Image 1 (cartoon, rainbow, N blue to C red):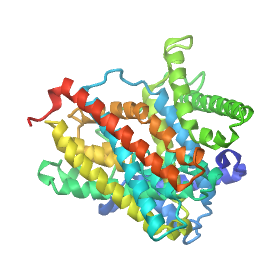
Image 2: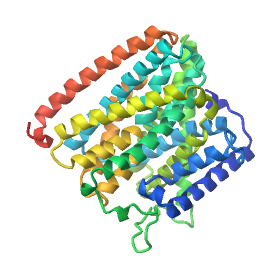
Image 3: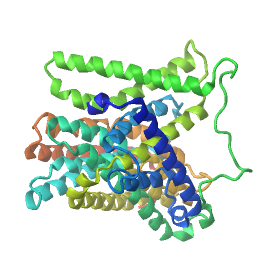
Image 4: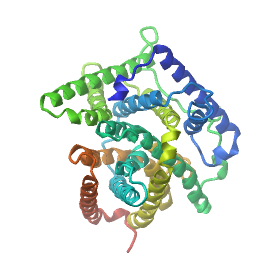
Length: 456
């Protein structure tokens, strides 16, 4: 995996982190001063990323930001973000609404995969014979799962001859963010009578009189800085993840399955998350006592995510994206339309209350990230008085479990068919069958849990 073997100096690393931080500061200033960004609630990290893309080596070459290094940062930040998610205590309560949203999320992932492969195959057959149909598989990865997963999985396909998979994944994910915020806000403006006060679309700064407690100290500063303990915990889990994946890679080599090693490395974030969950239970309930602070973990995870989004935009190779701009735009447009139509069809049928909130939050999440969903939800539910915010968090955990077979199946055209066209056709059939089974299970659940249904 290139992200593990990429060589860079300590100076490169520190300079890159400093520049990304400066871009985040610039994005923060622009968000506060520019009404356009406030109106569409564009995150500071997204502003920073596009500023870095324009000022980086791909365009004006003002900042020494190398796309290959940015891609490596995205790969590693994905794992540490999932470690933070694993360390954060979650509720064991699964509401009916959360289960419905979980089914909805995985259904959209499957639909996006089918639509993406269909458009990519059509483009390959009709106009672009050099296009790799795997680009279509990057649609659910970039839209529904985020830039980190899109890059990690797409870059692993370079071992099978698709060298531009990682960059294409970042490009599609970037378009997904734009769809989530700009089209999402447009849809909200179309129902402005139901939306929150436009004045709530503020600059991103909290007033001095309304600043919640961000974290609590679980250690005495005389002994050790609590933040240092939490950072060390994340680093220790990442080291264990590296050792585990390296050991599994050795076992694959001994079993004659060395061609699967890139795929294994691309899923390191899942192993990191599982190890974090195990560590959380050990620390919270075992010998170490209750010293993980929820607020501290949340702040760290949010920081990792902001840097990940910024680096993912900066890491886009415009030369590669421009070569395939037409299919990338076509796949993204098809995914956007399919996501919109599916949600428009099912949300009102499933839910009898908070329909707008659930529709907007799901649309933004399934084209951007869960942060996008929560940000757009805030426009219609500024105090999070509805259960939708909690449902989104719970549903994401459920979707990760139900959607895991999709992550395994998505490599099938390469691992079983060497990237040939029949492999993508067979995969489309598999996704269709998976979608049908999922919808049947969802329908049975809905029949036994009718409380959220509207009258037929």
